[in-house]
Length: 122
Length: 92
Image (tube, rainbow over all chains, first blue to last red; front, side):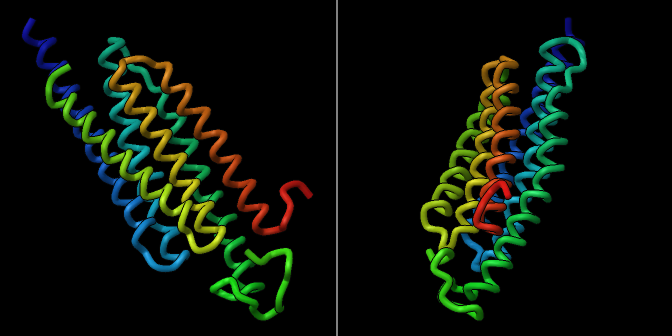
């Protein structure tokens, strides 16, 4: 049947495009994590992977498994929603910890305004 | 499965593996502890995406469950590490 083959080809095309887009965005985010200079710049980069990367690969998985099962399957929305909601919480706590550590130890981790706190030296 | 999908799955696996290598390098070489925690966060998200791609490659929904567990445990682990950096102890 020609219609079914067309639908399968279309679904494979969209699965492949979302997969390429999501993995390329995640790679760009991780390269940013590698290349940027200070910590506060590096915090921004991986969020490219945790929002658009997860969204695109989840979308590709939804399209693929919906075509495979013959009905709409959207388990992956759980992962996308969970990661999109929890990433800002994680990074907010992490940046607050980094600010606290920069205030107590100085930006390079040597001494600082409070002085030599032996418990927090690396 | 046609050739386009197969090649894009291979590309996605390669680029996610390179992304995990970047995150692992940041964990190993990060100048301070918060850089290492950020690298761990990126590493588990990339591993979860790689599991989703494995699921598409094998056509099995089992990998979805694994990806969900990785996401949950990774979130808890990163928040616990950030809390440890902030306070010096996890549960006060």
